Length: 190
Image (cartoon, rainbow, N blue to C red; front, side, top):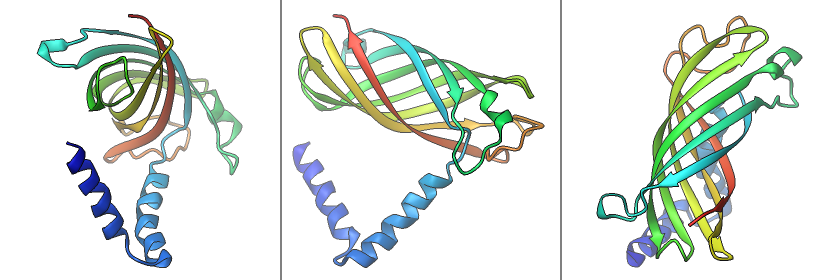
């Protein structure tokens, strides 16, 4: 497994190019694509419960998460109305180690799941929606049964045509919408 990771890193370095100008051009397309994943930006806070350590004879575990989210408007100009958006979510994910040993040592986890959301606000009709989260999480244990979780990944949405109407938001309603995000969490328990 370690040789595969080293090989992947070497391949990325080799494919990136030799000089700084081509590297910037090649990675710029990726960064532009990530920047265009536009949906409404939310700050979300919640709690989770994990169970099934060693699920089906593996190191996988199931995690249920409840989250409340509030719209964060961009400086360059969302109007005051769209700041009133809220998102309430219930998420079920399966996480499994990609790298690392037991949960008592640092691990890199792969996380896949499904989430249900209720979007509401003062200026549009509430609606429900689903997404499919995919993340990579760094799990860093310390102090016995506590751990820090740092992650990043995407939630892939499929919004209805009339989502958020009459507000004008940059959400793709003709196909899927990917929302990139970063997470930080503190875990306590056995």
